[in-house]
Amino acid sequence: MARYTGAVCRLCRREGQKLFLKGDRCYTGKCSIDTRKTVPGQHGQGRKKISEYGVQLRAKQKTKRFYGVLESQFAKYFEMAEKKAGMTGENLLRILESRLDNVIYRLGFAASRAQARQLVLHGHFTVNGKKVNIPSYLVKEGDAVCVCEKTKATDFMKAIVENNSSKPVPQWLDVNRDTLCASVVRLPARDEIDLEVEEHLIVELYSK
Image (tube, rainbow, N blue to C red; front, side):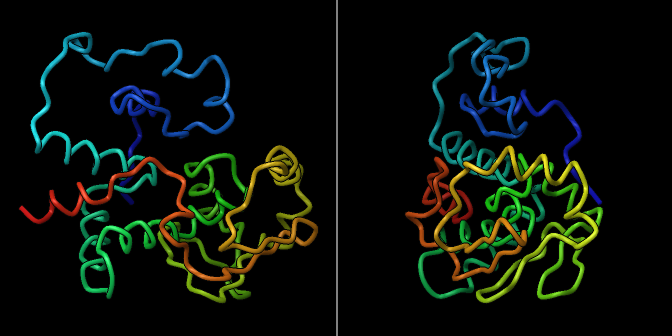
């Protein structure tokens, strides 16, 4: 299975903002955006005028990196979004939000999407009572997402839940922190997705 294995802090520096790829570290003074504000690479301190295409490309790259998906998978999601009724950009974000690894992160069952992806791969969660180990699994309205019974009693899961207990859970998800189970009330509306994403630029890029 393909995935990015490089230094994730470089991704934040390239986009010029925090993508929250390293969990708690992103909220401390050790975050690379706070310590090294330049774009990575030999010419990172140089300033260039960005073309219209460059602006659109950066919007796509930033969105991919927020959710931890690669190019082919992102293109597949865009095709799915185009076929759905409504605005393509909003459909795309809704699909990305419904990925199981993102849902786990939103519920506070993981400190980052990368950690959520790893936990899903190791089989620590169930959907509608069945174990699912595919991070890209797309949840649907009415699905029940739970931590596996054996995992609930482990120290690492207790620590994760405790550390993220104050993290707000979006209204489209309903979580019970005592049972470590949640339900997908509905798929999110655009104003419930709190990422700095300009989806119209992505649509413009793919429309070329």
